Amino acid sequence: MTESSEDQPQPNNPLHGIKLADIVAELVANYGWEELGQRITIRCFTHDPSINSSLKFLRKTPWARERVEGLYLKMLRDTRKG
Image 1: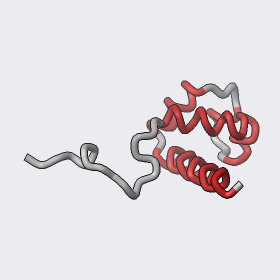
Image 2: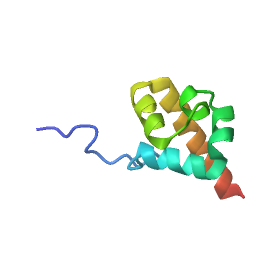
Image 3: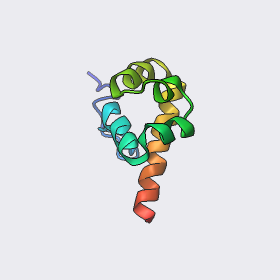
């Protein structure tokens, strides 16, 4: 029986084990909704934003999730430099 890709360790994936809700919460804490909406122009960040509405949208919209994950990784890199 083979292991699924979800069960195997992913040492080169910096997002492995981090929940999408935690990513969004950290981005909001770091940038705030207004700046987050300017950096990634999606309606769930610019019109009546909330963590729950953002999660619903991001879970079914791969391109938006990729942009959010990319911004999160950039935020982590910038934090380590500073």
